[in-house]
Image (cartoon, rainbow, N blue to C red; front, side, top):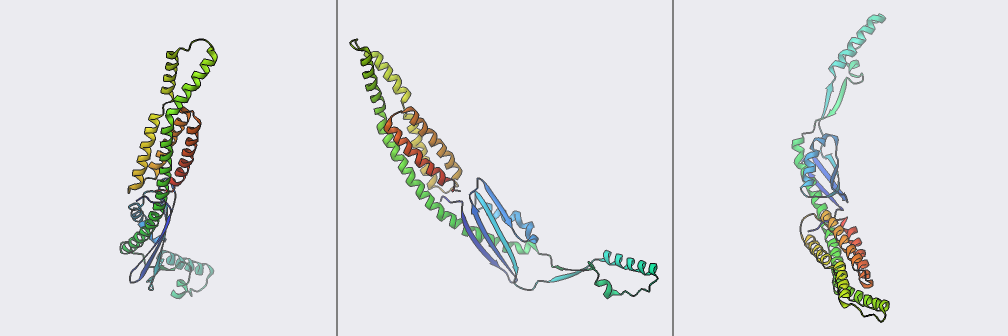
Length: 292
């Protein structure tokens, strides 16, 4: 199923003492770009998290916002900076000796000096918390993919309608194409007769000129390629792969063919059809930019 590149998803996961909340937002981007914002202590898990996203999404900028909450009081550790404590002690003794002051500092006094005692949270067990993170990310991404798929269906329906409109104009151009040579022959015959007056018209030379023009103005090959491109477009819109970039290229090719048709079949009615096709192709191009 064709998917859009825009969407939003949210997922939560719980354990006995933790809660992980993940929000995923995606927008258009030429390639796949994943930006993760998560607590510092979980940063070593970033590569694993990105692989979960890459397994489900092929294109677009995906922003992941992850928060980790402790549902129970977390153990906190008190650490002593032994080197700093000893440095304080030696400095104070040296100061006391220099100033001839009795040493009166004790353990309580030392413990209150800056940096001697530090309170730290217990280090996170990444292997234990990873299943929780993975579950939250997978839920958020699945939610995101569901939204992208729903939006993609709407885009695909619109593109199929525009493809049918273009196909209709291609039929009209093909039906009109024989009149290009016929009108040229009539205009050329009339002009030559006006120039020659009473002189007899050389039908063979006229026929050669018309044949040369017919070959030069033939748009049959362009019509065949254009129809082939439209068939490919239908197949892509009915498939399950990411087709945004392929369709973008295909639209460029269709624009090239219709421009060639317009320049070769220099005829008023066909020119009108060409303008309509180019207008629809521009709308298709704009919509394709939103596809994964």
